[in-house]
Image (cartoon, rainbow, N blue to C red; front, side):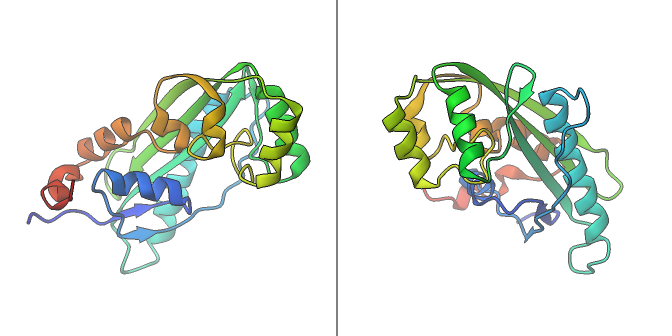
Length: 208
């Protein structure tokens, strides 16, 4: 089997890890990166998503230089932003935030922007932004209360996780489902391959 560069996933998200594993990519290291995700004044949602992904990648690359075992690895980072128009929705941490998000998204369309960035020592940074349009059904008060009681919204952009219970609220989706989950697989594999990571190397051993 041909040699391949080590891969670092700059995220603690089990969803992003599972999506990479879905296409036969197994990161060698996980290095969750915490950065200030506050939008800059007047910053557009798509610009924010790409900036955060790029910053996570850069911070992680700088950090792994101090780890002999990890130094020189390729890094992939991503960030997802949910927006209604230019209004950026928070990653809900309180019940009040989650309720405000769900109330606003109920019965209307919104956009999900996922930025992805791949970088490595001595290589050109590659990045992409993926935009997906999602429409949720109009939720009754009872449906909102039931959903909020699950706690599934916690830490989720826009207060919902499409791969969970909230998936039953989606009336229409135009774009990439996996981008809404957290990592657009087509764009991710394309970036990795263009950076020299052999995505298809492990496919022959992946059970169908």
